[in-house]
Length: 126
Image (tube, rainbow, N blue to C red; front, side, top):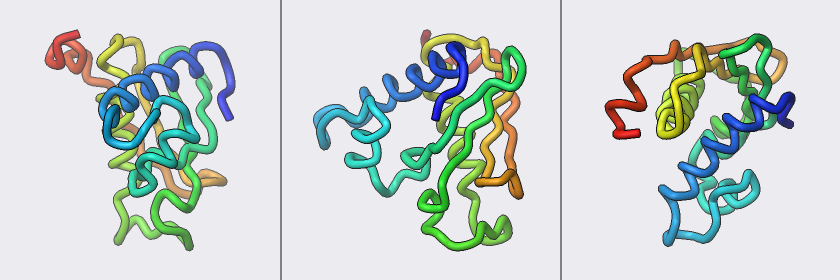
């Protein structure tokens, strides 16, 4: 699921911040299984892989459950953009060392890349 130490640290940061967001609502959402159990309606609960192909870049693969299953239709579903934006903001609570965050469907047929905004963390008060 997670490939590389840095990618793992970034995913852990995302899970930690997400767990804080959902704390008290439904249990521990700071693990992949806990997040999926707590917020099955959130597309970012269906991450199947996180890797860092180059320093500063994250590649996140989500499963079809993230958009309700079936083929991904970018004209009807905006799941990739939603996941990229949410993950970027939640990681920014920790630091600004991610340059790009790309979210992809299995096999890479569809992708969306969020280019990091260096001010995310300062705006959020980190």
